[in-house]
Amino acid sequence: MKNLKLKLARMEKDLSQTELAKRVGVTRQTIGMVESGDYNPTLNLCIQICKELGKTLNDLFWEDNEDEMVSKK
Image (cartoon, rainbow, N blue to C red; front, side):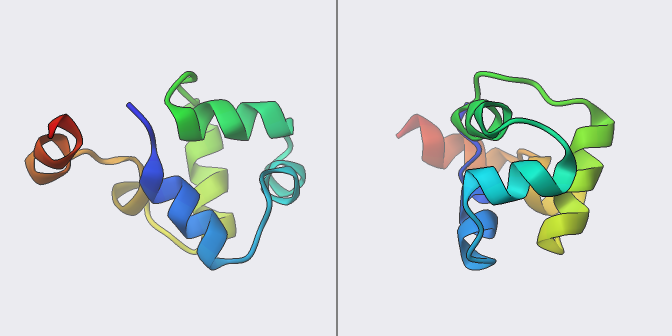
């Protein structure tokens, strides 16, 4: 499942995938794969991403029923 919340939060901070990747110590490809839903990040990486973007784990990585319903439409 795509992580549009992460992508939106990154764009709100005016960061490229490359810039965010450098800040959290991974490759641009890793950030791209997390955003596209092709990579399940570690809890440590999720926390680092949240810190850089000023968001909580719930903000970026928690899926609630409403999000699931929207994505299935």
